[in-house]
Image (cartoon, rainbow, N blue to C red; front, side):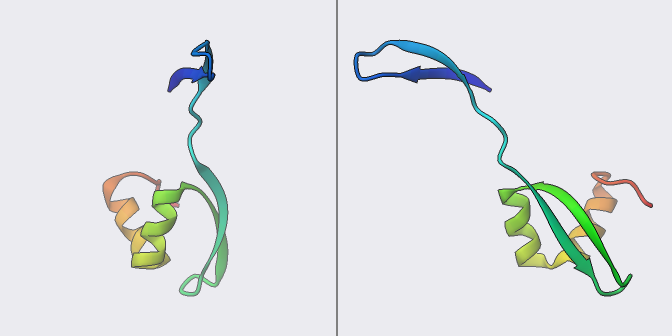
Length: 68
């Protein structure tokens, strides 16, 4: 997204709103390997709530990641 920086004197300059993404490594005990995922802060909270195995299973069902 694009928006404006607004100073105290109300001058406006263009700025970008970047996506809040992280590169995070997770261990999959069922497959005995590490995977690196690029995910948002909301995705990280989702994985912490559901667990990595269930989150990956649901992401595959919804078509967010390819079956490897």
